[in-house]
Image 1 (cartoon, one colour):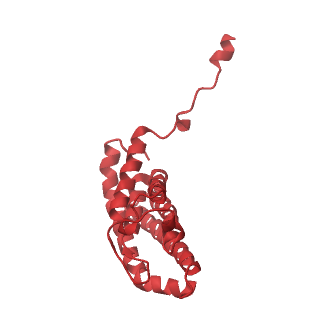
Image 2: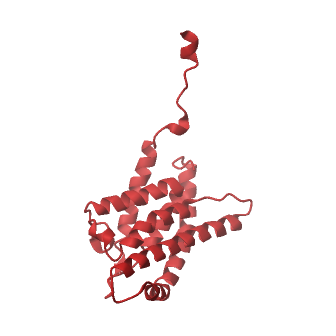
Image 3: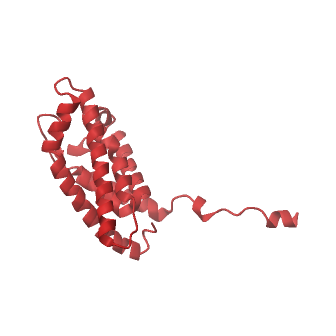
Length: 199
């Protein structure tokens, strides 16, 4: 009996749930994204000009792929249940099934890709990879958003929407995504030194 008790498996630290500290960070950055989402310019097409992808890339870059992805998912869920935290203080499930819903639903993918950290002896290579991953996430958002938009309108085809997006939105979105990676890497450093981030 004693030997059996002594050999009983002990819980692994890796199996422990997300710490309270991590939950606080997830909540804080979901709130940051909610604030950033209100910076927008409405357009007649129904798809406003926003800097939300800046917030998504920033959250992913700072928190890493796991916590960053969770923070964006929490933000989306809070908006889906009715909190007015989407662009122009909108909220509710209709925002996810409407014209802009595809963009929002793809944000966790962008956050995860922005949060992947590639360690390399060269900082410039590491930075370039981070930017490439974040921009790849942005392209996925644009494609997913354009696809859902095309399903809900008879005025523009998917191809026309993509051309319009690449002219009207994508150059700006690429620029602010790169800026988010730059700022995110700087914000991440003091958080890691303070012990808030272990990734």
